[in-house]
Length: 112
Length: 112
Image 1 (cartoon, helix red, strand yellow):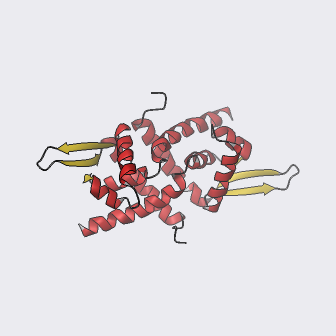
Image 2 (cartoon, chains in turn blue, brown; image 1 turned 180 degrees about the vertical axis):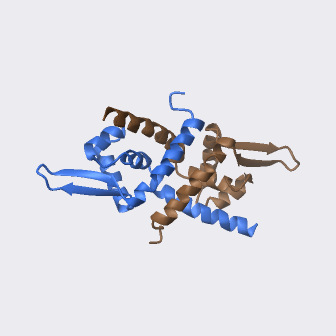
Image 3 (cartoon, helix red, strand yellow; image 1 turned 135 degrees about the vertical axis):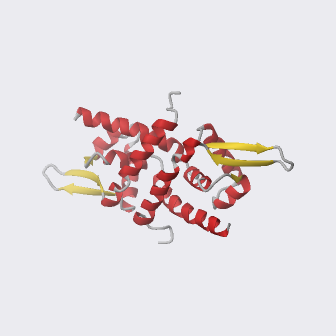
């Protein structure tokens, strides 16, 4: 019983840590979108339907802070800024893909 | 390019759907905790450290509504109410476990 409870807490701690990043609205979608490859701010905003410039900017800064996303500036001209997943962020891709498959099979869409 | 964009949106839709449930604070932890087996409200509240009675009650109702959790009343005496994962909820367990492993390896804990 004590062992089972300890295991519960350990499990909680890791899952809690994961959701400290992924539990925030948009973050999963941003990582998922960047999974298709390095992209610009504008392309990202277009792909993550419904997000505002400010929120996307904040989320990208947070994801960079958490080590999932890297921002690269190419001096140009023209200057271009692009965003990509780090190795850590790449590690989330197969898991998000499984989450998506699970959702498609088990949850009803917002239209229902 | 058109195909890549279409794929992005399809991917987004499924991941968005997943986070419509899991993006809500506590839900991942509740599912993760119930993964250890059927349990009572009180035991669940103790395991999900920091959650209040009201919020746990709301989240359990939402998770039941989404088909992830089932509430069972045993007429007793004494009357006992227990919560367990449905088959759909069980399908999340290996994914949450991978998320936890990823977080442990890639994210820094709140203490750092």
